[in-house]
Length: 318
Image (cartoon, rainbow, N blue to C red; front, side):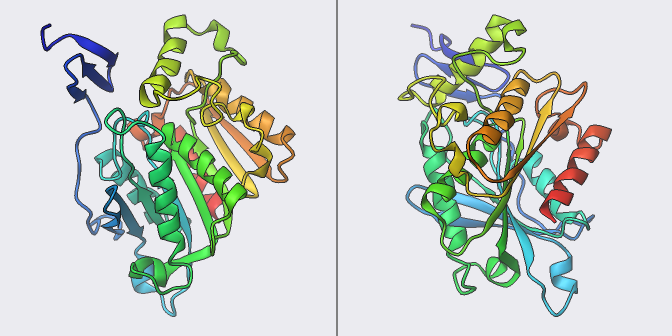
């Protein structure tokens, strides 16, 4: 067997060879935390747990160093995308995105960008376990005297939000559901923002039937690749419509973004509809960006639709 024989090919994201070698084609660049010269946003990396290794990157806006007396700010916990198998909280894409969001003078939030172990080396549910561990670590600061001073000093634990894009949107939803079912001591989760969330299901919804079969197959194949022990595309982690606990979602408002040219668009629409019918008592709002594809806002953060998205998220956080 040549060592160039492929076992899995999810280009342009990741390839896995039959000899076990994993080649990530994107999402491997990293940038250090910093004080951003343009915006004054400060960031730093923290270690949430050693075993397994779960890091996170924290962000505080310039206002924390200039305003006094210190008012506590809403806390945004962010889960990055990348199909559960690429990207990190220290990638330029997410570092720049969080910098921009935190620096928005209307937002004025403290942010925690969660890292989690990636598949296939660490198959799901590792990312769910790490994300929950990160949330418990964050919550341990709600009394104002845990290990991380920025959270102790600046975060308002009565105004907490989760957000994420793609696989990170899946994580944000599932973590909010866990909060609703199990509670998270000291934390009041107000809302979640799901950007082009990575959901699916065995039965096509909306216009999915008209999408190319190969594209549909990639969505479900990637899920099986990252979660080999899954029950399939109707796993409640992947298809919230199959989750009997959906009505227990642990927040009062949800903002869902979809993009017209994204194969996941109809899943976002479907999620919004089933959430309304689930017995959940909150309010869900859905916004569609016309003419755009999956996570367009990360690729072109200054385009009109990306700017409009940021404005909407900022208003939601306040």
